[in-house]
Image 1 (cartoon, rainbow, N blue to C red):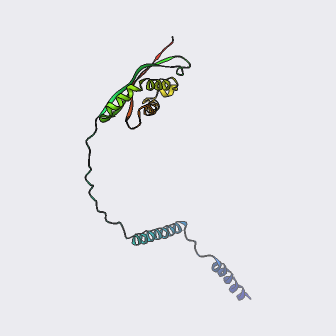
Image 2: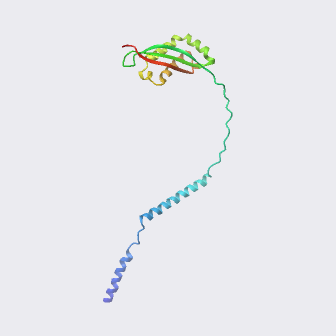
Length: 181
């Protein structure tokens, strides 16, 4: 029995050694292995895509056709209005007088026709511009480029003389002055 005990003891000592799990892989080794697999897959994907697309195509430049340029037409300026116009909407109901000058540009070939039409409809054009200024918001009259005012005046002038004659409306002078003290 003593022999049996001595032989039994080593079996019990050996049994736990056999039941132990093998040594665990370190987390760093797992991360390295996963990164290597991902890089291999990415490299394979890029390689297959490049082979399937055939790579970049060769490009040949074409020369531009010679541009036909017409001589630049000269523009002329025709004064439409130079007047002092009232506006009560500016300054919280105070009367402001705007020293306003409005000029339009047109092609040299249309100068005589536009000048004649402006003389014929002078009162109508001036009345429309006066109405625009009198009903304009303070913001409109204080814009740096007076874009809104230009657009409104251009529309009214085009209605009076025709759209094909007018190129641009210029406002070289728009100075507010207090009208009542």
